[in-house]
Length: 249
Image (cartoon, rainbow, N blue to C red; front, side, top):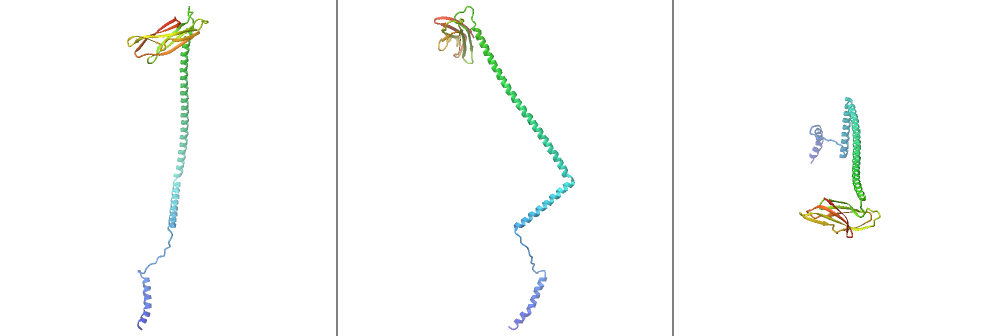
């Protein structure tokens, strides 16, 4: 018991010496002190450094280009290109305007031509009507020696299909003659399937009543295989046949 206490007292300087020697050797532990920053702040600092570096690089590039004279030439070339583009646009607009005017002129010319053709067709139709009226009024002229109602004109023509168009003009040459009361009989003669054939108006003789003149017409339907040779018109007053006219087809 008495020997243990002195040993612990003598061991104190020895332990201190060992600790001091360990600190001086390589095997002594190292202690590093680091400052901990939040990661958003680290990202912000990194982005600032990258932006600063990019700005420096761009400035250096532009400085090099301006020193080499490339920037001036590029601006001049860009100006020339812009002028050429403006000239081409003006030429395009001019060509488009000419094309639009040409299209309008062509449309107007076409419309005028169509209008002229319509007027020509109308004039031709009016000319035909005038010729018909002229022929009609020429037939109204009294024939020598005629004093009673008479057939002055008989016309007949085949239409498309089996139809016969006919027209009869009857007049009274004497102006102060009484009103004519009679009837018109129309007969079509020919062949049907190679055999003699005759047909009249569907309703029989047509009643007529006129003072000076009268024009009567109609369309007669014909049976198949019918061939018309002659058309006969008779103007009858009472039981007396006043006039007869025959036309051939």
